[in-house]
Length: 134
Image 1 (cartoon, one colour):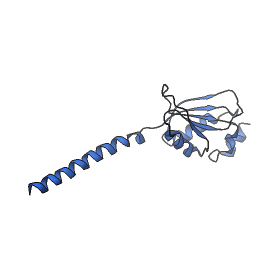
Image 2: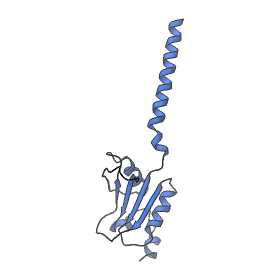
Image 3: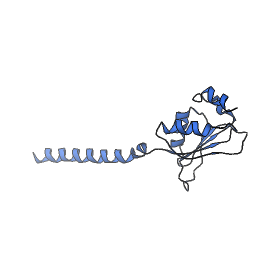
Image 4: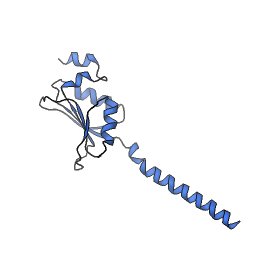
């Protein structure tokens, strides 16, 4: 009888420990991803569009800026994760194929989105937004 109680108690403790560790591992899912948006496309108003789009999906937009027009494609840069955990999530939301990991945890943002020349090819961007800003 005592042996059965110890086994049941052991199983209960293992279950409690498992649930505790599972809660710790999934904690980062609850926190919004911190994002900076840099518009290097030369098209006005895209920062506001992308900010609103991402905020509606529970993403924390820290900063947006129009920067000097560059001849680059749109890219998502993950600043926190070697495996592009945050970058892949944002790239998936925006349907952006290019993402890269450049680790630098000295800043608050986890992801930087650089809107480049090909921004008007993104599926989420409505044609009317591009047409209005030409």
